[in-house]
Length: 84
Image (cartoon, rainbow, N blue to C red):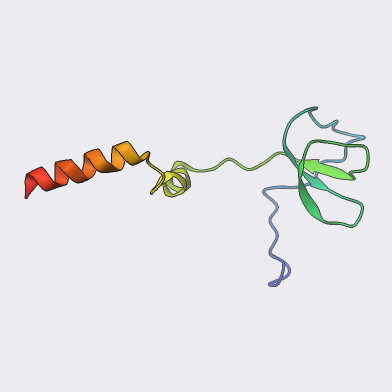
């Protein structure tokens, strides 16, 4: 991380589309002409591309926590009530 205001990593990098063509119709991290990272599908206006990082299971669990269907929450609440 060379800049504390804008931390970076060598684990992800933008690919040069002239050297490594991007996949078509896939959601990617893209570098636009203004040097801004955007998420989208490849277009000729972009300067570079990068695959999205994988999401670890520990973060996926956090993403889904509290998003259970209402019927499941009620079922859990009922079960907890039975234990008391």
